[in-house]
Image 1: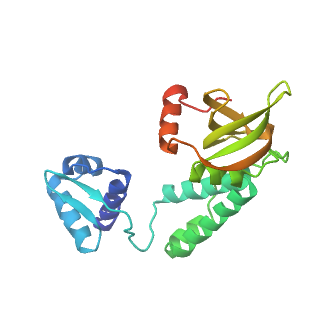
Image 2 (image 1 turned 90 degrees about the vertical axis):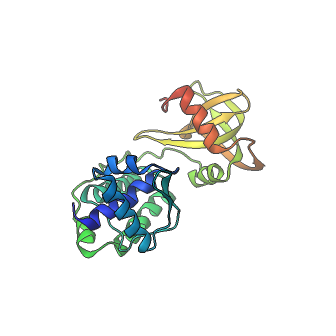
Image 3 (image 1 turned 90 degrees about the horizontal axis):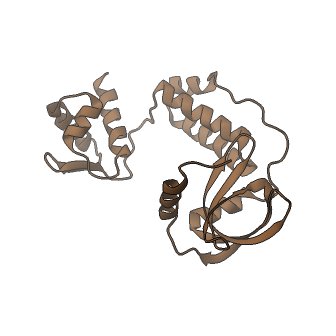
Length: 229
């Protein structure tokens, strides 16, 4: 690994740690000596990287630092392209368009050889079922999740019975043949999973729900661990 690649990998490692991380841990993750780590951190700081900390205390990278030009490994680039292609085929129209735009923005700033690799990537996503998965606008649902606002919805269960629900939406699960809205349901006073193709209507509410999205997601994961089908 060249020194420039090592410095870039150090930045990526720091980005993965939201809290201060010890120099020993960083050195172990990178497979370098602690002395080399200290030199690399000093080099990045001289280049403008906002790395706070010191030996014996730990290090954290403050948000906002980018190392131009934008660099990815071959596998990272393949993951981005494949993921964007999957979203383009499996997500709703607005999210699919966003994935295409994101790839275009990445392609505009990566070096020429990486842009070529993006263009000739041989990883593809198979065609989707042409059946529309839902009648509601998932962009409305995503907006409610981002802003932590309640939704009023009419839901049809497996037996065809409809019910009105007020929910606290905090996640959406995307599968090949179904999408699932994960929410806290006020009617059931519990976490519930709503197939989006069974939601007859959805109405955004002005009221924010009383808990943070991250807290709901943490509790849901502790109880369920994964999306049920």
